Image (cartoon, rainbow, N blue to C red; front, side, top):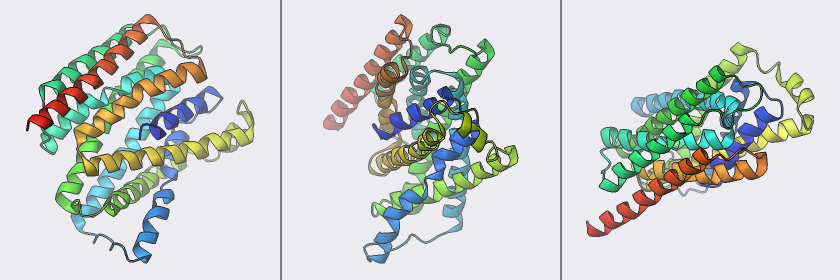
Length: 308
């Protein structure tokens, strides 16, 4: 989760930096790798280690709903990375901890500790600072309205991300149980499959498959580079989702939100090194606040758990 998600974010930014234009294509790529998880799951059935979870109406509807929400979430993040630098987009995505905590408490009844509330306040302050420093890292050709749009879509995507975490844990608690690790693979395969179906419909309606050839021809480092970016974007995103789903299975929505937010400093530093993203004083301050919020949560949660 801490390696694959940052890598996926950087590939998304690279796609747009080197000439990609379609938000639908990069969001479709995120879920096009769903068969990878099936490659791990199917042998477990044939070797007789586990039995497939029975499909019920509620479980099927939950897969469909999560698939639709995941498709929408990927599209929101695609809009964000089209207009924002990778470091800024990842810093804004740290707000997912706020929403993961909120939805985890309301939907799954996750416990809240004072350290959690402190982390939420500190991270929210970091997001506000980024908003106040909107002119320091805007790429050439990106208008003020486009930058604002990317900012809004990033926050909305983070909110939806938190909701998806909470609903995914609810599926484990209420419908699948925490019987065996194979249910993690089952949920990811089915949710990614439905997200793939919804996103494919969007790509077809938008006629973006026809545009892939021209995008590849005009890509900065050539056609092979174009398809390699899409391929590794698909692989890294699926590995990241596998990690996130496993964390939900093993712990809670809040913990998944914390780990999802910890990837922020990793992505920000990598973006500065690889893409030469500007690192203004405001952005450094926001990064410090974000790391401080994570550390506060982890230390407080650990202490509270030992006491209980």
